[in-house]
Image 1 (tube, one colour):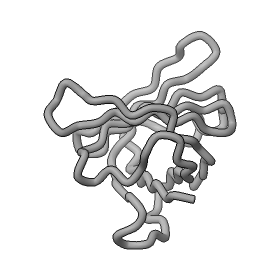
Image 2 (image 1 turned 90 degrees about the horizontal axis):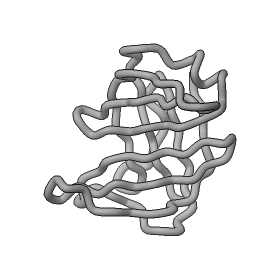
Image 3 (image 1 turned 120 degrees about the horizontal axis):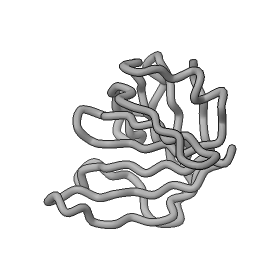
Length: 120
């Protein structure tokens, strides 16, 4: 399973936790992604166009340029017509909010997931 979203960085805000930012992405396929990231490893700025890949296998990446992390699907919640899929990247939270039912069906609790962010 691998899916790639074309996204734009909509906002970057400071978390209440020291040195942690919260990035809001608006993506294709009616998907929004919100994620925590440490400032020292954040590779994006507001309005950057990026590609976010979710995969069950280690994706190809450019070391020193792309961000790649792995973690686990920890929960899923239905809200109105969207499903929120929560992925923990070793404590850093990623929330996918989507109407894509295929994505919902392909990600199960405790699946190991790789997340790659590549700038355009």
